[in-house]
Length: 361
Image 1 (spheres, rainbow, N blue to C red):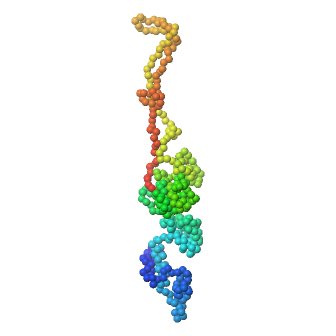
Image 2 (image 1 turned 45 degrees about the vertical axis):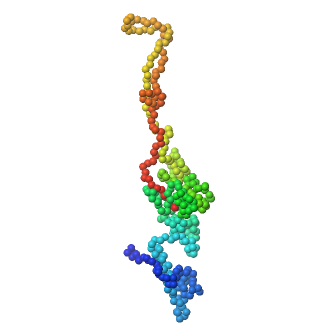
């Protein structure tokens, strides 16, 4: 077929304007034989009376039945033409003996979420976490993340900022609605109470806490980047050795590691040298007392000769050198090297684009 062969769409269902006396809608599923003579049903279609001659007691097919069945068919055709979704229907599910494998229905609790059956004759309720359902591969599932360089709200998402969500009666600060049931359970099951605290503490289950109108904190991604878990199912690399752990561990998903600002400790400082200032003060030496002779030669008023005297030894007396080391040039008296650096924390954040982290509900 070709695109040009697209059929004309139903802008209204067949017999859309028929009055109540001219249409049977909905057409009953059970047989009407013995109940309403000649009436059609989904069980019998048009009954045998419609095929018998009137002279033999037959009854012609009823116009109300024609209008009714054509209306029901074309109403569904129109719904499909407009791209309407099909919500989960427990009554329909029971009537057909369960949804088949591959069937896709929209959540009634959280419109915009979709479920796909993974089993034939599936009679469980996906909105109640029944078995045999999954998020279709093409749809966003509960807990999926999204980042946008904007603060604009994203439909069917919560902001991952540490504020709370819960039931309509919970008083949650970010979103108090029945639609948070699935993401509430996801946060409860995935993260610890330290990361996503429940008001009043966690009870027996997420469903119980939700029903009790307890709030739960959203996972907080404020000023936080993302990185891979060490290992991710493979052999750990130990590349996070020495990195501060805020919560969890280097090998556990959902953990928080690292810091935005850091003050270096001595062991982290690169090997280096400092300036030293040396101050050499002037000084003199004395001559010790004792017997001895000091010879000298030189011009003087009395001429050269020998000076008789006493001395304790052949060396001069000890004296301080007055040399000092210090941190300030020209002073150099505190026996310290020159100071350097401010001792403040430094930036660990690379050049990044800022935005909002969202989580699908």
